Length: 235
Ligand SMILES: [Mg+2]
Image (cartoon, rainbow, N blue to C red; front, side, top):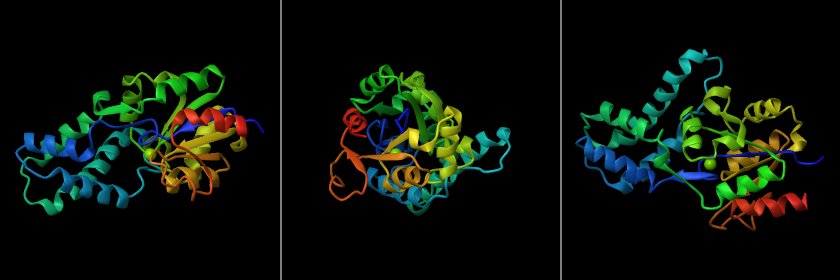
């Protein structure tokens, strides 16, 4: 069956944080009266983000979701700072941090991303995003001028399921009225994107920009998004 839709993971695949998470956390913390090293924050963020519960709220009422999204991040950031001593300005800091990452300036596209999307769009592929993220994603994609390429944009907090659960992939497929065999999903996380997409029946592609997993992965691997064009010709 021919591939008709291509779904993209967002962070680490289409875009990344401008600078680094640790730098941003540290800069805003300093502005709120707390000096912490970039390295401690970067390490703390990685640890707490990796062990956080799935960013999804199955069964939640729609009007509760914005509060749940922010509370999810509040827990993560609180845990990042927990071992780093008193932080009286934490609540104001957290609000500033949450707002900051809703701004497109907090993010940058990978250099080939927009060009590749335009190319795939021109070839008639339906493009979508499947992301374990909250509703700030919609504004960020628009702000980076790529939101218009995608239909649907599926954020885990609004889908009631997070990758690698098949349900989030099924939701994207349902919105396109396509079968799993008609869709490809590309992402930078083997556990979330590759395992998830494969279990849902989609063709998975790993984007591995360092090239490290090039030879060991049991799926198609690209180093840059524009290599997708070659992958699509080979399917
Ligand atoms: Mg990712």
